[in-house]
Length: 391
Image 1 (cartoon, helix red, strand yellow):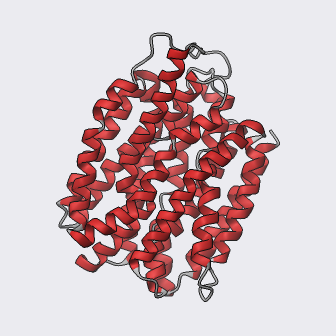
Image 2 (cartoon, rainbow, N blue to C red; image 1 turned 90 degrees about the horizontal axis):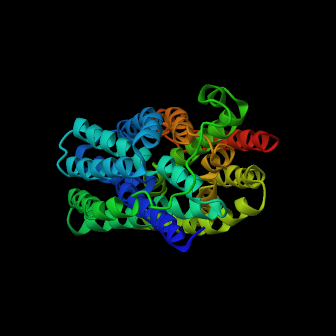
Image 3 (cartoon, helix red, strand yellow; image 1 turned 120 degrees about the vertical axis):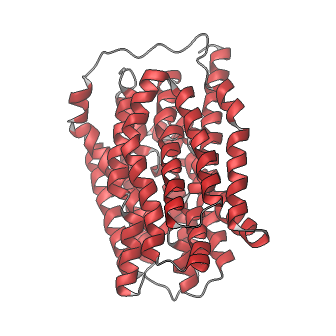
């Protein structure tokens, strides 16, 4: 690969990472968890109502994932990422002025546009089309913005809310999204000596979307994200309900996402060296056990251990399914649509996680039921990814 093209490829990876930071400062599970606390204080809404904000975001994101894939195949990654970044700015501005649940649903809709527009779909297409080797490392770096946003989001949102207001925090996030638009415009242009264009060779789109090879990693991704989101979006409420100060709970979320960055660098190269699905099976077993550990509230080190160990595994598992599909269909002209379809199907399935977890808490008055459901979904994801490794 020529030196100029290599620089262009890594510059595109870095730009997608920064665009993801802008999204997940505002919309990471940790940031939403902090936001829910301030909304509960200001408006007195139930946990089910608060969780519905996240569910709307995830559901609409799922609906739009396939459209994002089609748009990437039709218009290229730059146009799609620009639309996604503008949606972040608009959504955060709406949140900063919200006086009702409806405006927060509008915020959720805007961030739902942004997530597939800056996330796995453009990242996997850029990497599959511009990298012949080190795809696992490149995908880890491209999606590291999810974790950087997760690291900075909880503490930054909580700090800005305490020093000024939670509304001010979301105005800051809107401004950041606007600032990075020139970077997106410049770095995601097509290089003069681009990688070979994907051809129509290989299975047609309809056959791919009906295949076991598509559905196993897709459903594994959906089940594990269901487990992750069930816990993460209610983390601050869960821990403060057990007597932990809100700042400490937010700090643990920061640690969780920070360790996830390390997980990108640990598991990305492992995916390049070994069969990704087999590595993912071991991660899934560990993640299931760690969720079950949250049922032990009387041991003070449990939240910290969960933040460190689960965050490490989750950092790699998050992009595992898209990497598997990207490796299988890298030379297919419909790659963007395939990754978008994966994102859509998965998000439609896990979008109910925040609302269901909140409903289970409201119904039982305890965290045990949502934790057990999250553990069951993580175990299901492990079985599915193990089955994928046999193909």
